[in-house]
Image (cartoon, rainbow, N blue to C red):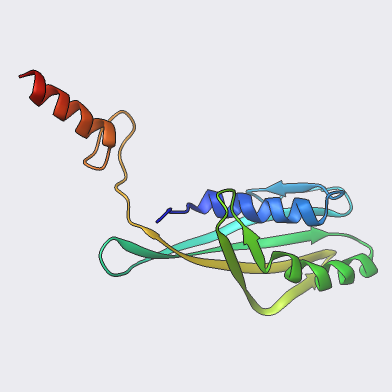
Length: 152
C-alpha cells in the first residue's frame, strides 16, 4: 500500500485546479492580501489521522479553496463548476481520491467564494525519525546491520 501524505493530496488538488482553470492565478498555504481579480487561494485547513487495524491509518485532509472576484457573475460560474472539478482528484502516483464537501458546498462573502473540501484515504502508520537519525523502519539501517554482521 502506498501511503499518501497531506502534501501529496494538496499538490493533487492544486494540480486539478490548475488543469481546470489554466488562466487563473493560484496561491497557497496562507490567505494572501490584494490578490489579482480571478485568483484562487488553496489553504490547507486540517489533517486528521485515526488508527485502524494494525498499522493502517484513516486520514482525512481538509482544504478551503477560495476564489476572489468583484464580478458576481464570475463568482456564480466558479461556484457552479469548482465543486464538480475537485470532486475527484488524482495524485501524481495515480491514486484517485473522492472529495466530500461541507454544507453548503460553496459560500460567497465579500467578493470571495469559499469551497471547503475533504479527502479521506487509508495509509500506513510510519515512524517519525528526527533528522540525521535512523529508525527501525529505515532500510539502509538494516542493510548496514547485515553488512556489519557479515563482516564480523
